[in-house]
Length: 114
Length: 115
Image (cartoon, rainbow over all chains, first blue to last red; front, side, top):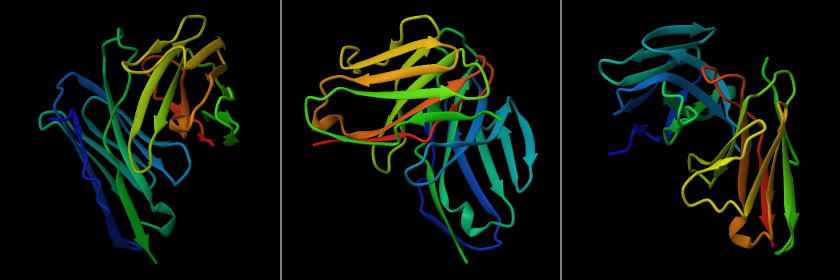
C-alpha cells in the first residue's frame, strides 16, 4: 500500500463548477499537509499549507484535513479554465530527523472547460 | 512572498558534458534546499536534501558522484550532473524551505536533454 493515494484522473469539469480533489494516507504520524498546483513544464506552486486537522480557506480554495479518517481534500469554487493543471497533495511528519521530506500523491489532472 | 529562481530553464548538450543547475531563494533565506527529478506524467522523486554548509543527503539509488550538490549559502544551491548521458535526460526541480515547519517553495524546473 502506498503511503499516499491520489486518483490521477483526469477530471474534466465545466467552468464555474466546484471541484473536489482528495488524497488518503496511511501514516498517522503525518502532521503537515500541502496542496500544490503544477502547470505543464513548470515547478509546483504552493496553494495551501495546513498543520494538523481542520479547514483553511484562501480565496476560491478550501483545504480540509480529517486526521481521524486520514483524508485530505482541496475544494476549488467557481473553477476557471486557468485552474486547468495537475494538483499534487504532499505531506510530512513532525520528526526532525528525516528533514521532514515530503511524501507525494501522484497528482490529479484537472481540465476546466469554458 | 517566497520566490525560488532556477536557472537555466532548458539545457541541450552532448553526451559526456557536465551540466550545472542553479537554485536561488530570492526573498528569503533557505536553511534547507531539495532537488527533485520528475518523469513525464509522474510525481516528483526526491534526489537529495541539502542543508546550508553541510554535505547533501542523497536518497537511496541516487549516485552522489553523478549528481554533485553544493549548498554554499542560505540562498544558493547548485546541482551538477557530471558526465551526463541520455538516461540523465529529465526535468529537474529544486525547492527551498525557510525552516523545518515551513512548506517548500519550488523553482520552475530545468529541462535537461542529453543527445
